[in-house]
Image 1: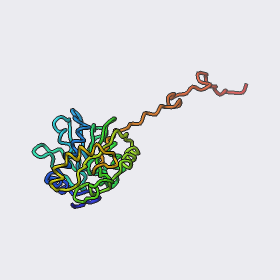
Image 2: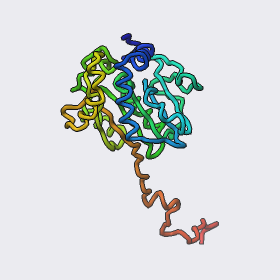
Image 3: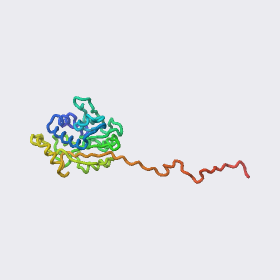
Image 4: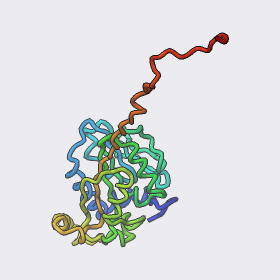
Amino acid sequence: MRYCRGMYLDVRDLKAFYYRSALGRAAQRAVREQLTAWWPEAKGQTVVGFGFAVPLLRPYLAEARRVIGLMPAPQGVMPWPTGQPNVSALAEETLWPVDTGAVDKLVLMHGLESATDPDALLAEAYRVLGPGGRVVFVVPNRAGLWSRSDATPFGFGRPYTIGQLEAQLRLHGFSVERHTAALFQPPSARRFWLKTGPVWERAGHRLPMAFAGGVLMVEATKQVPAPKRPGLGARVKKPLTVLEGLGMPEPTRGRV
């Protein structure tokens, strides 16, 4: 796989993995099934993906008010979805063409672990989410097999532990709602592992996080700080003074 500027993979490699390889299609299915279990619908909502999240967004095309697939400039962009009007766009990592507070649901996959400036990327994700907006981060699991294999896109970039990811999200104003793991099957294209993939996924979800799969998935909400109550000085624009209401003394015109 080819690196681009920063730590992003080339969009051609990502497309080839997810749409032209059996292992990539299995990975797409496993992660997307978990996402749709959390978010079964998005009727009338704005759904945005950043990085290479478009393999996860197809279930929302029919009912969502708007679906946008943002792809970082160093990675490159491809038209998506095939056979339908294009909804993908090229974007700078920290300057998305999305209005502040316009997004209801946001998905980042192959985005955070590849970012040149993760803190600025999280700030941009926070900006575009509306109050109470929800976001799912999909990142390589540091303890998983997929992050140790360069045969898949999850072997590139910075892998995370669940503690590292959740601490970083809280630091940027997100409230963590839940987490899980996916991709419990080995990152192998051999027929046996591909054929038994669904069995691995079902069994893996019954294991503790210590035996988590190849990727971690964390859902968080945008935490909007409560407005600060103004103090007395701010509430009373013209505070009363001891002499208020009394006439001001006038200077005498001459000596008495």
